[in-house]
Length: 307
Length: 228
Figure (spheres, rainbow over the protein chains, first blue to last red):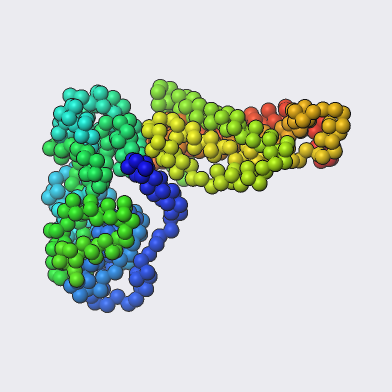
């Protein structure tokens, strides 16, 4: 089989599995189903329903366990609209979040974009009793990607270079890109890029990737921890004017659980967790079908953060 | 809820919504194009298969099971599978919709043929008709009501599912549903859903008229008598 056919087969089976699983059943970690009495040092990490967030949850729990805290993970709790209230209600104690998205969720009019500014803006708008800890180097944000050939042909390096050629280029991404600021609106206002056509595809999924690979689109909206970018040698266009808000991974935690030990343990983890490392972890789960908890533990051991 | 209904009403009332390259009229034409072309192709494939197995009585088990298998295929999966081979064009949409429409037409055609009275078939042969004549002059006319039933079911399914064209960047009423969700604009989502439902019901009613017109008079009389 040709390599792209193999990818095709994998993606298709993935798509079929995803359709099959979309019934809304939440699979909870067997450990977490025993919701025993919460002892002083117990802490429950919740995660959203996508693999990267589940990995992050297990990384948090892993470093905390190494410090003697009885940490458990509740996986796949759903979207932010469900998990943040669960955090406020005390069903879970901590949650791996993403700066920009969390800020947007709490304050629709937030305009901050640089990492420190977003972090500072989060403090005042967080619900009472919750706080964010220092953020990780790792970041999963919207990126605008072209193939190596396109980059060479039009000498594209940053989003600023787009405006000279955007009338010849087709842009593909999720349907919301058409009207939201971090999308076509911002690309036009901030970088002066107006594309020949917009094709509404999926959010960093097989359609957008396939269309970029097949040349149906020239500029694709993908996510920075997508391993296919590296694997295909695609070029991520730089964003010097900070159109896309920072999306560093940041622990959102119940204040009462943020003991010095917890804060210190997560800070050490966040120092070592870069975008490249997180991309590799994602690939192990998404492409190689390894278990998120095993992937997390193995990485923590490699980094000397757990034994 | 009342607010939403008002929003949807306002969505429809906006005059600019109806014209232009993204207007309702254009989306209707696209939706009809995807749906009708797929249904026609599905009929061209499914009808001969259904007639053949109904006439000969052979291969029914295989055909019906293959048809059921076709029904079990998730349409999104088919779209992505074909997309990965064909690239970004309308092939994935057409293939998925044809695959969706074939089973119900095959099974209904077969059922219509199987329901033809044995005595009628024997009598036809007895009067000297050959196999083809029996098929086209006796069995097919008698099976038409059930065959059209299958086509009606297929059309309703296909019109509802043609929404999926928007999933891979194309038009049709699905554009409103997908864009509405993406933009958190519920009025647009419901507007699109209403348009799809109205189109499905309209086509179904039109076909039911056709069905009545094509039902052999003897069959209609017989049915009227038996319901009396």
